[in-house]
Length: 613
Image 1 (tube, rainbow, N blue to C red):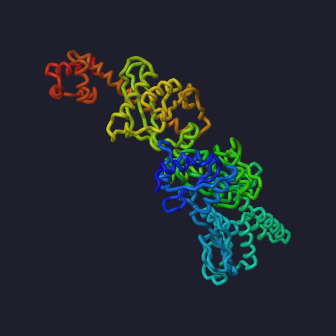
Image 2: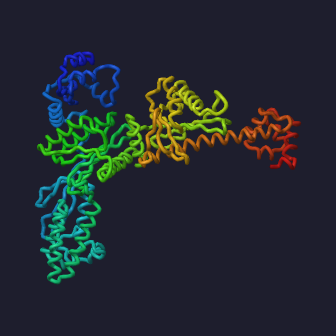
Image 3: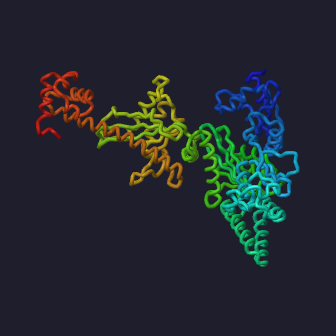
């Protein structure tokens, strides 16, 4: 097996042409296929030392024994060839979206009174099968809705064998089944109803509605008012379902919407598929986060359509796509040269579709990671607006509290996976100066915090390196603390401030040179507000406790013979002024430094009427 030096030497001999490279393991198995504008630059990057690769890439490179390459005339040809080779070899490190969820079918049994059901696989019988469909939950729901709308039986009875064998079930009595078991529904009428239900399930609800409206009119003309009323109820049920399902997409009937949400080292891709203004399928995939979201978005879309044949006229995305022009050209080529638009909406109905898609991804990722949907969505949204490489797992926040420069303290709170991590909370008393200087206070606190990071034992919570720091304050605090990060060589930690308005409500996130408005970003706004409120609560509670203790010490030093040191000892021993007041002289003498004479002075002080308050 050649070493990485030999592979780097071979890579350095490659031309600066576009092409495809094929990585192989020691068994000659293809484990990765990639494309490049310049083969030499791309392939050598894998084997150079000290380059930051993702965990997945490091793992792949460690298994590379050799590589081949194919030159192409253009980057587009390289992309087409890459997709073809990935489809052919199914390389281990290329397959992001595993098409292993299984499929569902709609089954229409072959009998005098057919049954409609959802099944996981076809059988070698005479039944009719519609499918396959990727989303089993969607098909199951659609079948159940069709049975209710058209009042078809969902039981296992066989007709006409089971006519009048027993009383009709509850579904018949509450109007959800036509009651075939009563023997009062003709075979012809039943089969026509099944045909209408199948047309509805195939997505032709508009055609089914037109036929039902004609049939209703026909019954009405013949004065068959009971049947006309039944058809009217069926029409209303279909319209109600369509109103619930329809999402009219700016005049474009067919489109797919892609949304990606970031978690802890994972991405969740959600795809909502619309046809005729109606949501007809949805898919969700959870994959490793490689750190380059535009590139990930491009790769995921390519692999999604590599697994499927139907590409709509519009593909809607929730963010920047790497090589957008190249991707669009590839989509057109895969769609038999029919035009395909790649859109990233910013407002209106299309933006609401994107938000719905991202909410769907956030919900699935939250379940996968054991978080709430709001936490997952907030951390993902936060990573995007702050341009972070990943969703932050550990967030530290700091706030300064004092009374006109007196009793200067700071609070440090930590959020882990979007939730308060109270085990890592810390208090600081400002020591390097007295008076009011919030910038200097913040700089001192962060200096002491990161000294602990480098000097503490491994089991200290100070050893946790934050993925994000949020200071209570604006760009002044950010700039004061950034100098501390530079001093410790920690400028890779993202640093921002939290800005309040005149009513002390969260308004924006501060950078070193400006602000990012977050009022319109519901998830981020709610989360940052909770962080800001928590750090303020924590710091001010410590300030009040310290200020209260200082006031108690001042009160005790008014007693003849009690100085600050003895006052602290008394408070430490008894815990409160109330308990000191209630203590006997013998109990007071148990405190270090308190003599019998001094115990009498203390008892006398609290025993006098003018000191009872």
